[in-house]
Image (tube, rainbow, N blue to C red; front, side, top):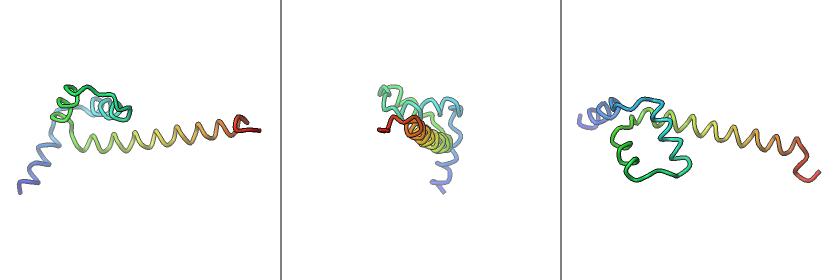
Amino acid sequence: MKAGQDLKDAAARPMSFVQTVRAVAWSFFGVRRGADYEKDVARLNPVHVIIAGVIGALLFVLVLVLLVQWIIGSGVAGN
C-alpha cells in the first residue's frame, strides 16, 4: 500500500488552491525560476494542480474562441 500512502501524503501538502493556481498560471507562460519551481514541486497538492490545469486550459480556449469571434465579427478578417 505504499502507492496509496504516497498519494495521501501528496494530497496533504500545504499549498493552498490559490497558490497552486498561481504556480500553474506561471507554468502556462513558461516563466518560472528554478528555485521557485523546486519549492513548488515539494509543496504542490497534485489534486489542486489537476483542477487548476483543467480550469486554466478551459479559460485559455474560451479566450481564444472569444477572440476569434470578435475578429470575425468586426470585419478585420478581410471584409
